[in-house]
Amino acid sequence: MELETMGPHVEAIASDWSEGRIGPDWLARLFAVKHRTVEAAFRIVDRALDLSGGFGMFKKSELERLFRDCRAGRFHPANPLLTRELVGKISLGISPDEQPRWG
Image 1: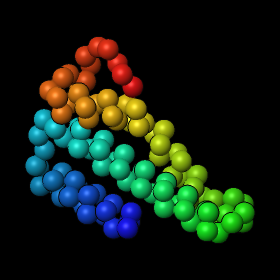
Image 2: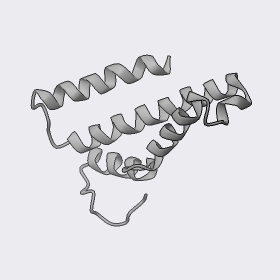
Image 3: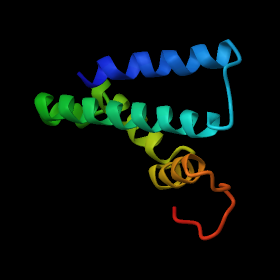
């Protein structure tokens, strides 16, 4: 079910970008799609590791790489805290540079 929500969201953002439908909320939308897809991918791989057992943590397992890649997505810019700050500020019409920094 997680996977079903990721594709359409990414495709909608990519379509908007390709067709030039970007506006003042574009940064918030971009950070939001990145955040949602990374978090969903992490939950998917985490569940797969639960189901596979201990073998999933070894390099010989594809799940190990997937887990590592999903984990890296959480700290790749923008991390979850910065994402929430920027999406919140942009949604409320507050400059992202406005102090205080909440992330």
